[in-house]
Amino acid sequence: MPTRVLILMGSDSDFAVMSAAVDVLDQFGVECACHVASAHRSPKRVQELLQKAESDGAQVVICAAGMAAHLAGVVASKTLLPVLGVPLEGPGLGGVDALYSTVMMPPGIPVGTLGIGKAGARNAAHLALAILSLSDQALRARVATWRAGLETAVATADAKVQEQLAQRPKRT
Image (spheres, rainbow, N blue to C red):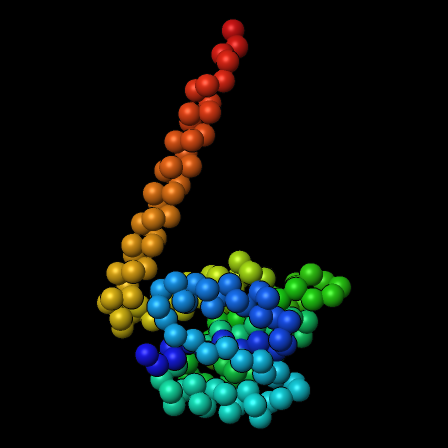
């Protein structure tokens, strides 16, 4: 199966967070490639990885970076593929600096920006699945089934809470 999602990270330490995105994509049987490439320290590598992914049929790029977090913006400037940015926590500002760097793109070069950290990584993968499912009905069905499971899980959790409330002694 061809690689459909390219994940780029600014540092190997970012994989501790971005493995959550890989896990989500794996759960749905979506192939991804995951590489370390820095917008500042290895711009040529970023370009080469992006070109290879495009020629291999990738349809979505997820970029994760902290601090200045220019990786997603640089990638977005070099491709017409949808680019999703995951800001990562860094020293000092807890990832807010990366969030601002990722979300504040000039008009015409958009980056779909997700939340900071692992929750953002997971949601980036889920958004990539939604994008891919526009042209893949089998994937769309798997995503729909998974989302229906979320609704069932909420109903189950509510039933547990209601049961606990019913068992509480009544005050008079």
